[in-house]
Amino acid sequence: MIQISLFLISFFLFIFGSYNISIFSLDEAKNASCAREMLERGDLVVPTFNYELRTDKPPVHYWFMMLAYKIFGINEFSARFFSAVFGSLTILITFLFSQKFINREVAIISSFILLSSIHLVFQFHMAVPDPYLIFFLTSAFLSFFAFYKTLSSKYIYIFYISTGFSVLTKGLIGIVLPSMIVLTFLFIERNVRFLKYMKLPLGTLLVLAISLPWYIAVGVKTDWVWIEEFLFKHNISRFSDPMEGHGGLFVITFIFVFVGMLPFTIFIPQVIKFVWREKYNSLIVYLSLVVFIYTGFFAISKTKLPNYTVPVYPHLAVLIALYLYNLDIRKSKMLYNLIFYSVLTLIISVGLYFAVSNDKHLYILKDYTLYFIILFLGSLIAIYFYFKKDIRKIILSLSASGILMSIVIYGVIMPQIDKESSVRYLMRYIDGNKPVGYYKRYNPAFSFYIKKRIEPLNSIEDVKKFTSNGKVYILTRDEYLDELKDLNLKILGKKKDLFENPTSVLLTNKE
Picture 1 (cartoon, helix red, strand yellow):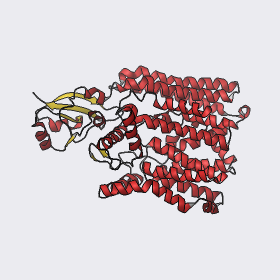
Picture 2: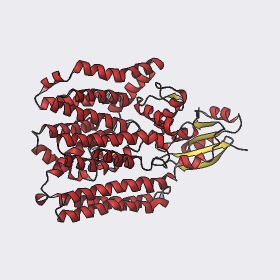
Picture 3: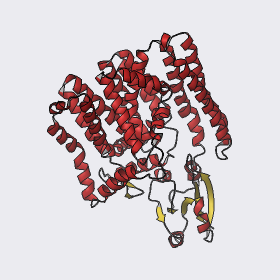
Picture 4: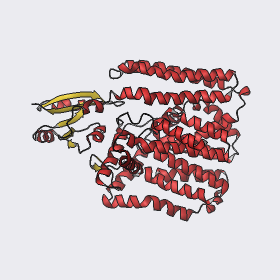
């Protein structure tokens, strides 16, 4: 059965490599550690990182990580397991929706487009809330349109259930954007009266029944500190001000989508023309609104990150698939798109080689960047089939090269890069039975592996007091070493954090 095969293929692609690559991303480390601490306490309500309140995200991903820890133990595979599951479900529901409301061939093309996106594969490899949000929002968006077309009650209930879990996954964004998109669509369709069929009172109760109990519970347990911090700092402030240096121009969010969904976004100019030509087709209008409104919302947000707009990928994939399915290749000018992609992938391959060669921390991995030539070769094969006028083989060439590149990244490249991880390097010096502290700041991935509280040391006096109790370890960054130079400490090791600017340092008492 094609649905089962698609799910299993997707799951293999999304889980591949998760078991032998350490937790080194800052976001992964905090989320995975938080879930471990909640499991340790048997607490389903209050998230903590390093045993202090963490107000960044609601709990859905913590709950699934806790479940995986219970089944598989506390390790990297467990932390990422359900991200791969929800990624596979996202591919599956996109396929099922496209098959029902368009046809099977468009459904298959859509799946190929999604699986070839290296960025999407990356997201579903991560122990973060985004894979869960992508699934629930995709479910909400697609189920609304299914209800709009069929008036089948099951779809509107799926819409409200998915919206409720979206709110429980990442907050207000889970209800604000679906509401904006649905209302805009009905207004454009001149069918606002359709709202009377949507069982709004019951739907509202369903969303609240799913999401509100936990928000009330965490508010009560934290004297409403969690609610205040999450609402004002991680929602309103992120929208109104760039956080942690993640700002940028309005257009950068659209660039994120373009780059994130390569190779098939090379056809975006033609897709836009196709959408305009089919502007009276309600499905195409709806999918376009999901893509444009969702991306536009984060374009005006002051904080911009590539992962924010990934929920539009399934809907954009269907639009691209529709364009390719209806394409008359004999009249097509896609050769220019393919040549552009060929040049782009060649530049990426060569650029990565020289960039890594000039990085004193990663230069030994420079030869591994040559694997990116896979994308270039895929583009050349696609150009060959263009002259053969075989659109199916063009799609297959582009998709296969993207999928193969992801397999190489997680099977070959990332394990080699992981050997240069500061956490992997410094952990071998730490005796887990001894106290561990950190001076001012540290790489949060250490918390996942040390599995106990890392004592905060915010001043020199704190450090002196901490080191007076026998053998201890202190984590810090090299930028703070001058402040500690007069203390009786020695450096056990230094290593630059992967994909980050800081260099982690491990110190201990001198004999």
